[in-house]
Length: 157
Image (cartoon, rainbow, N blue to C red):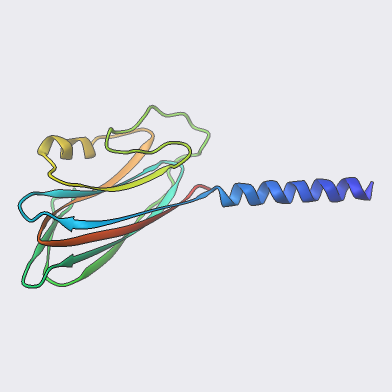
């Protein structure tokens, strides 16, 4: 009887560890921003995942970069600038939702996505602003001469 309980406890511990290990996700990217066009940094996640993203903006010497946020505010950056965004979990993983926007490349196997999209248009920006049942999207537009990088970490527990 003791061996059965020991085996059951061991199997339960392994199942919990596998669940915990498979519940953490990360993505990072960085690139030069073309000063002649507008680019967008887009972070998206499944609603059952919480996500924390760190952004690093680095204008080149004697250059400025302008960040435009969805609420209409803007920030002009002349020196290195860092900020962080937290997107909380807003649903349970068992809920069923229709797919999200075309700009979000997420799936059940990888429920977070982050990307830098160059040469965005107003139509693309309208796609970011949609309401989606399955996906939460955070974005900002960036223009100027410099580089942007970010790292995002998600947890689905």
